[in-house]
Image 1 (cartoon, helix red, strand yellow):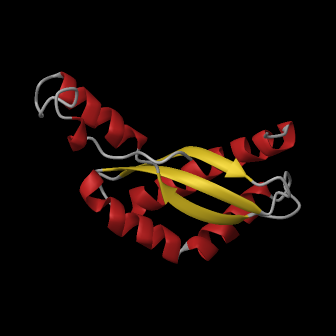
Image 2 (cartoon, rainbow, N blue to C red; image 1 turned 60 degrees about the horizontal axis):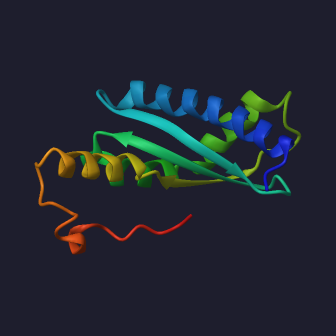
Length: 130
């Protein structure tokens, strides 16, 4: 279970990371939207898992690799922004949040744009619990 401290730190990281990543997207990539959908901080506050939603989907894999390659620079910028709130900046790990894709697939199936998943359940992706 997450403590209040973990939730507070996750909230600070989520807000600042969104600003840092959106600024980078504005500077280098026109038409790209990066949202920080969730941040999970370990109980010892040393690790933070950052879930990102990236639009458009076509550029998602390239962008997540670019973000992972620049993790140290992002972490350094975050440390400068949070130095008054955090003694030590957690290590950052970035992941793609695919929940919007899943919702979109269900929505298009319900609208009849895809094969009916109720009649053909094998067409649904197997989701993994997190």
